[in-house]
Amino acid sequence: QVQLVESGGGLVQAGGSLRLSCAASGPFSGYAMGWFRQAPGKEREHVAGITWEGLATYFADSVKGRFTISRDNAKNTVYLQMNSLKPEDTAVYSCAAGRSVWRYGYWGQGTQVTVSS
Image (tube, rainbow, N blue to C red; front, side, top):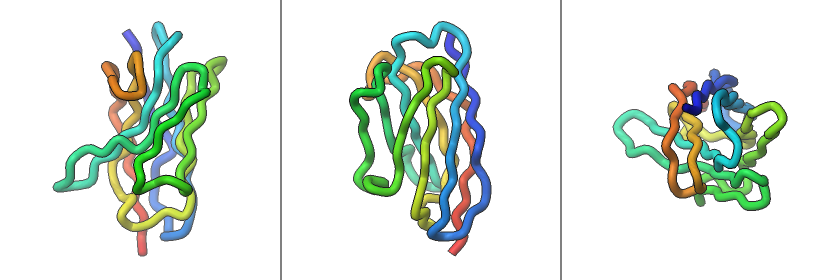
């Protein structure tokens, strides 16, 4: 079973940057990875995804041009680089693993990102 642990969240001013990391353990090989976020009172949003080979990525319109996703399979880690952060990016960010960027079966606990105005 795949286990996921996120890190890198915190408090940042608007316009700043953060890099989230998600460390995976267990049978990680072949899995696509994604990042989701959920703000209080809002539905969970699929923010970004990346295939196992890293050749294809997905980004929600709300973060295109500001966020990038990458992975280092040798380290079993996926990253979410978040630039030009806005207060509306405030949410709990969780990583997920699955057989495609549209279907996930494993989830981390999440890390809080707060962007102050």
